[in-house]
Image (cartoon, rainbow, N blue to C red; front, side, top):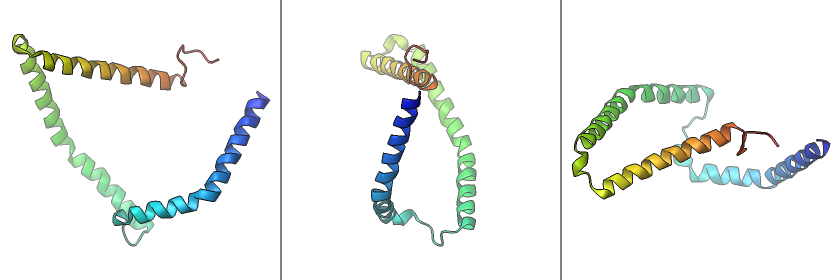
Length: 122
């Protein structure tokens, strides 16, 4: 256990040294590349205003998203009713989508268990 703590301290020290060398340059480059998104003056009040705008804009978009969701559900119902006319390509796409959802579920479970595959900590 003590060796793992020393390893962690060593890696943290290396990371902080790397950031001390390269962090400022990366920060300046990032700001320069994205200066069109920076609001002047950069004050706390302006940040609070922008965060409120984002929140309420997202809230205002809920009805449109809700409507789009039900359109998708209706489309799936329609496809299910006419499943005898379903093409192989459409069935393949649906199968791949289901497989992708299952894969994301499995990945989430693995992450939730602390990146262990068996569920036990080694």
